[in-house]
Length: 298
Image (cartoon, rainbow, N blue to C red; front, side):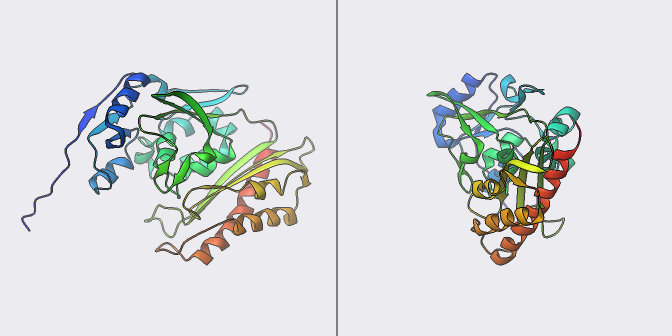
């Protein structure tokens, strides 16, 4: 060994518009990658996970760095907006507590200065913390590409580990989250094996909408991380709570359905049986926290 490290060579470009970014991506197809925050991609490039010809830095595209919120219209979040900019806004934090739970768990404070929620989604890791939170907040992905623009529910975005519905030349422009109704609450919880391994063994997102009496659940959504090849939207688990009085029995039933819907693996972070157990524990806790938040006056 001569100690030499062979580095791959690629073109670095910084478009200033969505159309320019799409053209640059389309020209190289699968050999082009988008740089949003870079906290995942740069590590993957150093580890030779990808061989690319072009790196497209989208930090200079206005639409991808725009964040807007109103209590009537909801939240529009550009794909490059860093996590800290989301959770530092008090109005957004109050309206989307589950998303804030997740955003504050993406690495340390330095990482959160670069990492974006859109980038976390596009990385499409089964353990992605922000993805279950986006699902329970009913986020919609706005995508642009050579064939025009389209919008899809966030729960359909990830198709396999590291894979998504994005086609060559396509770009996630923004995420839209509807305005939360009164008596809405959400939560995201995860379990990690130790502080030095910042990857969820299991992550659970939950949201609830309560009736005016705050005693009955009108609707609920539950989503999971790290228990299948993609983050999971467990529609049946949330649906089991719809129209029911708040009780430990109904919450436990939803948690059981969530457990039965998982397909975990055994790896260095924990055995499959342990992961299933954690799904039940964290689903109950996340639902209780979401309900508590829904009861708060805003």
